[in-house]
Image (cartoon, rainbow, N blue to C red; front, top):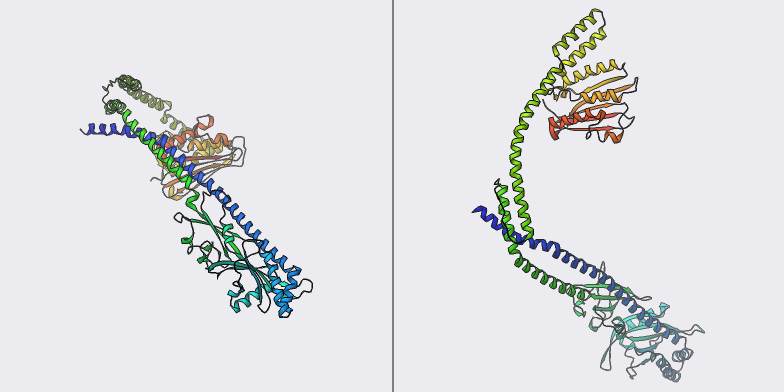
Length: 601
């Protein structure tokens, strides 16, 4: 029952896997493309809107600067107008009659300047006694509602500020109430003087309707605005100069490290604050005023977000339809696959009588035929392997016996020992002690080499054997080289396989010192490495090995590298991955072989 349950579970996973494959191959790339496209479109649109906003902000700034410059020109023309100057002198210095007639004429002259632009609400001449002559478009009253709305200290402060500024001075918007109507006006003022005589006459002010600033700040250029934005004006202290909701004019915005704190006025801004507001700032030249441009982020990406939602909706609909189709058409396929899986499971468990019988899908029939052929070949191969393994076992045993017999037959140790002993006594009898020492060393070397070739010995024994072995080579090559041993006492009792180092030492003497008569040195250093290992370094100052050849010594059985390769293979056979071997050499730079083996006692 458990086996059948597992097959049933696998049966349903076929459909699931097909759906997963469809999602991975089709759906996920589509979703990724949609997200990438959306982010790219959002980024591109944001850059474009930022450019358009910057251009719009520049357009607003240029229009305001142009208007303010035009108002300055009006004031400059007025203060240098000879008729106006003449009547200002009469107002200041004449008797009552001249003062009255001068005021009437001055009022008519001022009216000609005020009528130049519709947004000019008032133009006023004020002398140092605070006597004013004015023209107000909206009021025919003799009362100057603009100038007289100021208190005496305020008049004095404004008069002195304008008089001493030396240029056209800009005053913030102020609330006025006359003729049963509220007015929000801002003022430009300039010192009035007689250009010919230099006589100080007073100041001249031009009062402008603040609504003109709002119209400029929020123009649409006759185009439909997809992005909702709103602009207003503040001074450098954060005092609101122009705003569509007039009750906020004159209120002060707080400052933040990034600019102005607009939190207190957001409720009055005609924008959707849900997704945030982008704030841009531009300074109006030759003033202390700044344009604050607010942009509704939601409106910036409304079309892109809507397009993404529509696309995602269509994509999800397509995915749903495809999944339904997969379920409808996968039932028959999954049943056939399930039958194949059952027979494969039987073969997996060792039952090679498994046989698939299918009708229908050509691809699955081909698989079933191939499977049946494979099972047949497996059965044949198993039978053949049994016969071959028996034969190979017999051959292997016989071959091992022959090899051992051949090794034993290669040399008769007793004959060699007796012969060398006899020669040694003859050398001693003739007092040829050097020959005696060489024969004695050779005899010890042979005894050491022939006795149990693959046994482990102490490092002390291995080093003692190497010294005798190198002694014979030193004599053989007329002492063209010397050997030095640097062995730590801690490692002398350590264990190492016999003759493991001999091929490396022999390679250094035979090939490394070839062609030299003297001055060569072979150094062997053995020390504890990282507590658990022993490091053996065999280094010579001989011919060295070309780098390209040294790099392949451990992987190729060629020429003089066979012995070193055999050492490497023995290391892996004896110690596995716990041992390591590296070769560092260069042509005419000597050779350094480093071996690391586990520390054993």
